[in-house]
Length: 120
Image 1: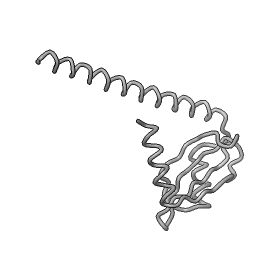
Image 2 (image 1 turned 90 degrees about the vertical axis):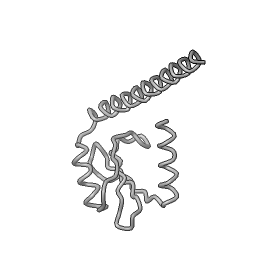
Image 3 (image 1 turned 90 degrees about the horizontal axis):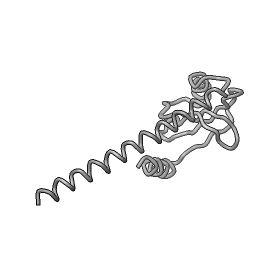
Image 4 (image 1 turned 30 degrees about the vertical axis):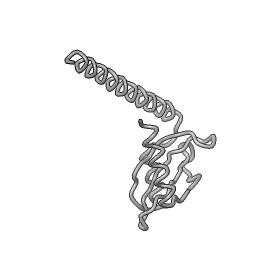
């Protein structure tokens, strides 16, 4: 009985350690990809955020550099005065706002669930 318990603990530790290592690897890949994209950008994330907030005031909840629809953009989720999210994309090359998408509460919830699944 004791051997089974020890074996179960060891297997559990192995699986947990493997999951943590895999999560760390995914995080490292995302960081490396963002660093690669940052070398191509002509403006900084801070400059892009300032541009986004001038046009769409609120609190920035997240921001990332990504390639979307073939364009290199800084994408910011900005919570507005109504409590909903506006996703504002600023060109990392020109500094111009290239896209704004208003998220409803339902869309916001769906995106959070999707991100949660991707992390696990």
